[in-house]
Length: 112
Image (spheres, rainbow, N blue to C red):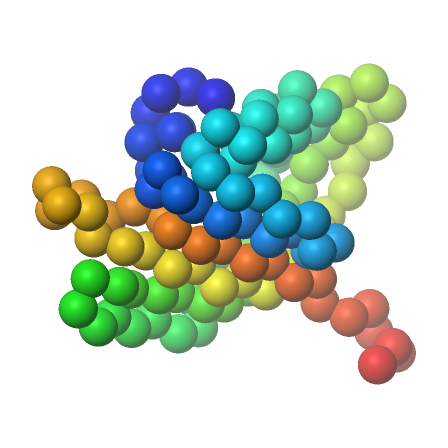
């Protein structure tokens, strides 16, 4: 993952994917992002922030995200809608970095 993208994550970041897979640390999260970028072209990414707050050295945001992507091999386009909760932590140098991200798929219409 490019250095500028890695700089968004705290060294001890945790990412929980919609399928429940858990990735801990910049190296593993970086490999995950690199894998996505090698397989898909992201043609759209919309984020809605429904809630935001902060306390001390922590801040959080939650809402909905819609990713539109195309498989690089098949060129098939798809859209995925998830809810998310992101937690940011202020570092010793004053920068805010992502410490935790959890994404949960929205249920399909007509399912519970």
